[in-house]
Each structure stands twice: as structure tokens, then as C-alpha cells.
Length: 461
Image (cartoon, rainbow, N blue to C red; front, side, top):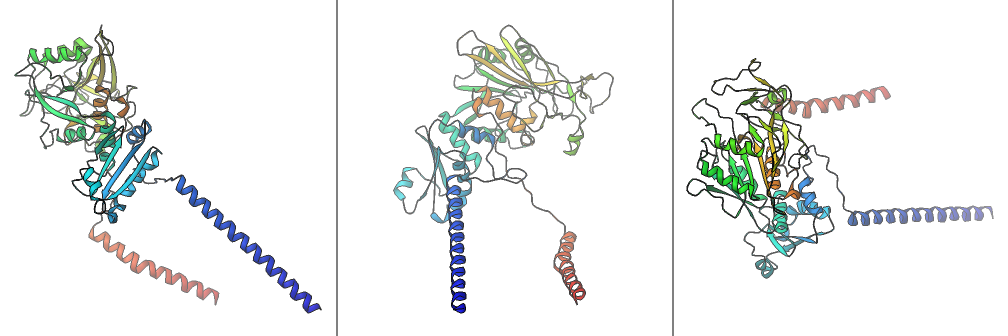
């Protein structure tokens, strides 16, 4: 009987433990099912990279947040290639439930691919507001650019005045503006040259007129055309370099443009700003390149978080006039100096004749036309080289330029920080360092582990 009772007790314990184990298994399965359901419903990711390589920019987030209705991103390629775009497109889908992503295999659905006017496999299309735009690349810049074109509807024309020594839009050299033209194209702006020499009038289809660092003084009829354009509600970006008289390339003093700007409340000082900056020295920059890292509250600069640099810049003074309201955008630090000796072959810091800072380098103003919903706008910067091919990629220079165009074109909702190119974080080592890594990883480290094991074994014996 005792044996029988013992067996019954053991069976009861086994049943109890079995039931408990089964319950635990059910709970674990339920928890895993809940985690998977939550992961599918709330797809969240965390970007721990230093430059936020796998996060969409503030500009993209702002555009998606302001969507009025649903949007669809359609990616057309072979099924085997879908994964190469999935990482990027999923980031857009995770931003908002309004964004839907579709994948189409053009080989299996040739009719549908033809309806999209597919030219090359691996193309993405953005559809919203009843409009469809092709992304120029399956990158954030390409897809966000397609969103902008679909939302804004069409391309706005940015007219660059040429003929008085301004830099060319098609020049790919260090001082050319070809990179700026490319950046404008990605945000649905068409950069085109115009001349005010043959016909002193601004074409009616120009959204914004740009005067980019002329080397020669403007004739009065050209200045009158700019004046009439802005004072009738037009928009202008005016970049005037200091009238340097050194080296082979000289820049004439532009009295006619200076007079026009003074009438709007911006007085160009015709000097060269110098600012010794330890951070600039780290970039290999001299005092002739003032660096700015503090900005005013104007929409153009309020969201900038990085430094901007301006090679060979002049200062300006601003004040309000009868029809204009002018705001500073940014100024140098108090340690800056400004020299009026623009023909010297070298700059002299600490010269008693130099004026002491801070100095205003950029301003933005509005012109009251007296007409309802019609306001002229202008931005004046005492430097044009910050937009050149060799400097536009410096920190926030491109962001500043594009924010200025957005504000001038009344596209304030696009003002933000643009997508950044992926940072190259590869480790570059010499042949000697590679040999050191080899000996340490394959010889020294294994011997240390073996030695530690032998030591533990001997101690236990």
C-alpha cells in the first residue's frame, strides 16, 4: 500500500509539474505573439549612429507631417531587387500612417509598369494630391524631392543674372555654381540664366532673381529693373563681395547696387571682414573666412544648428525704411575685425585702423507694396563664394542657401535641415598598422587566452 501511495503521489507531482510547464509554454507563446503583433502594428526603430545615417531628416519629417491626404510610394523592379529599396521606403512608411508603399515586379506586371512610364528598373514614384512624380533616385533627397514636386505642383524658376562677371551656373570648377543648380533642381527649382544687358527687365516667370557676386558695376537700367521687380512684389537674393583690388581678379565697387540697397535699408560697408577662429584653423581656414555658429530668429536661419563659412566677406549695416522692414540674419563675434585696405596683398590682424566687431554679414527684408497679399522680399549677403562648388558643402552652407530660396519663394514650410550624405567612417590604416593588427589579433591575443587557461588549470590542480 505504501508503495502504491508513493507511486500515486509521484504521478500527481508529475502531472502538476507538467501542467505548470504547459502553462509556462502557453504564457511564453502568448507573450511572443503579443510582441510580434505590437511590432507589426507599431514598427519602431532606433538609430544609434553618430550622424543619424538611418534616420530621415527634419525636412522630410516636416513635409510628411503636413500631408493633407494619403500618399503612395510605388517601387518598380524585379522581386529579387525589392530588398535594396525596402530599408529606405520603410522609413517613410514608419513616419506616418498616411504613407503606403507598393512594390511592383515589372516582369510580372508589364502593363502596369508601362502605365507608370517606367524607363529604368529600380525607379520609385510618389503619388499624392492626385499627382504622380518620379523620384530622381531611391535616396532621401530623391524621394523627398518627388514629394515636394507633387505637393507644390510644378517647378519654380530661379533666375540668375549673368553678364557682369557673375559665376556661371554650369561651371564645374571650384568657384562655379553647378552644385547649387543641382541642389535647386532636387527641390523643384529650375535655375536659369538671364541677362539685363540686352533688355533691362525681369522675365515675368521668375520666382526669384539672384545677383551672385558680380565683378563689374551694374548699369543703372539693370538696377532700375531690379528695383521695379522687388517693389512690385518680386523676390531677390543679392550677394555682393567686397571690392577687392588684389591679384589678377579685381572686383569693381558696385555703386549703383549699393545705392539701391541703401534705399531699402541695407548699407554695404565695402570692407573685408577678418575673424581669427580656432575652429576655423582646424578646417585649415584663415581669418579671411569668418565662421558663424549663432543665428537670429528669422525663419531662414532659426533652425540652423551647424556653422556656416564665408570666404572673403564684407559687412553691412541695416535699418528700417518707409516701405521696408529689415532683419539681421547673423553677425560675427566681437573678436572680428574689418579692414578697408582692399588692395593689400596680405591681411593684418590687430591693425589699429581696423574696425572692431561684431559685424552683420547677412540680412533679410520685406518691401510693402501697398497691395493686399503682395509683398516684395530680399536677402542680402556680403559674400557669394559660400555658394561656390568648393564651399557649398561646408557644414550648413547649403542649408542656408536653400532656406533663403524657400523663404524668398514663399515656401516657408520647406525650410529645415536637408538630408546629409552618408558619412564615410571607414578606418584607414597604414601597412605597418595592418601588420600590428595581424600579430595582435591572430598571435598575441590567442596566446594570452591559452596562457590564461593554463594558469587556471594549474591553480585548480
